[in-house]
Image (cartoon, rainbow, N blue to C red; front, side):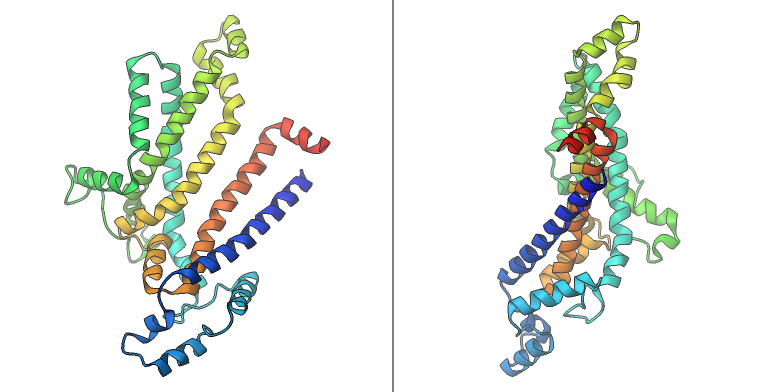
Length: 322
């Protein structure tokens, strides 16, 4: 097991290294001049050259890349080109919004998606099971932005049919006011959870329908167990790895989906910061933020792979023989 974890960690680091190269290259292809953004439209050519020299923008791209990567290896994300402030401190502050938002969205989507998917699978021939299946398909097709606007019109405080939840901003005091902070994340998290949780409903329903005609469930039913009890005791454990993979994929999607949601609900998270920094061409800051988001997705994949090995002994035996 240890050797497998070490191999997966090595692949994780390799993927991270490739990501740094791709992110750096793509951002340099984008149109626009960073020096012009810093100096303003009235900056003279001499002033632009001074800005490029001061920020190292006139150095060869390979030197700029190695300088950035060496800083990452030391845990230094660099300084913003526009403000000069350390990027790491600002990113950590923004993660206080983005991470709780993503975790709340994952919790809501799993808490609703799993039971609804099981119910829809067990009652696939009934009206309620078919209704859940239809609604999950419809919800999965809804863009996150549109889902957010619908929820604002339904539950938004001061603008919705039900005056229930705030629609804009985050408390200035942050998590020093936990009630207000959590309340401001509920509507954005619901927006993500409705769209991403629909995929969990659909897959869980399919997994249940696949497990119901299996021999081991028929044997359990022959011994007097109800279909629901047999499914929960024997069926779901057999498909748990697949369901876990789908949940992990949706969690990774929620991390990137937070960019749209934070902008819509005016939340001061990593996503809204990334949008603003792309517009201002703060390249060093943007590449560090994109790398952080990709790293979170890669970490989710690594944790799921390790969890598969811990849950299923067959995978451990197969790995040992290999």
